[in-house]
Length: 147
Image 1 (cartoon, rainbow, N blue to C red):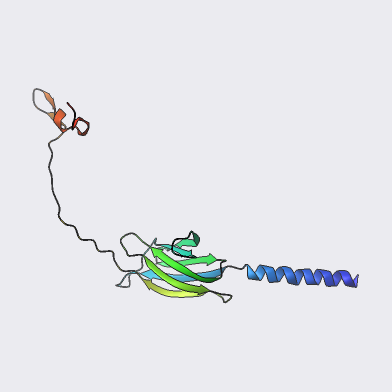
Image 2: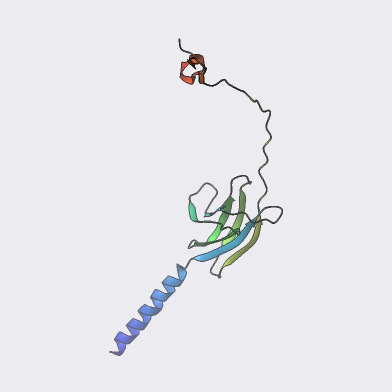
């Protein structure tokens, strides 16, 4: 009976030790623009390397706060993507410690310059006149290049 108690105790300690090793590390932070305004609905990922598949992912809420959990240990990359902003990448170390607080991550706006703008007005495909209905067959997209 004493031997059975020791086996049960040893098994319990072993299972708890294995469970503690697989416990996910929580990573949290806030995403804002250069003026300090929060960025909502930005995609946040943890990847092993930049070309790899995401290990964990989350989306920032309306106040720009995100929280994600990753069971992977070691050095990984935190990637933040949002429409209209440059992609943010940072190497972080996930260890046995508690939560990793990233603080406020600042995203820079994505600036694109246009070479020019052309405003083109086309006549309507169907034109209604007082005595008739005129269909402009030359303006049909499918008719271009045909006869």
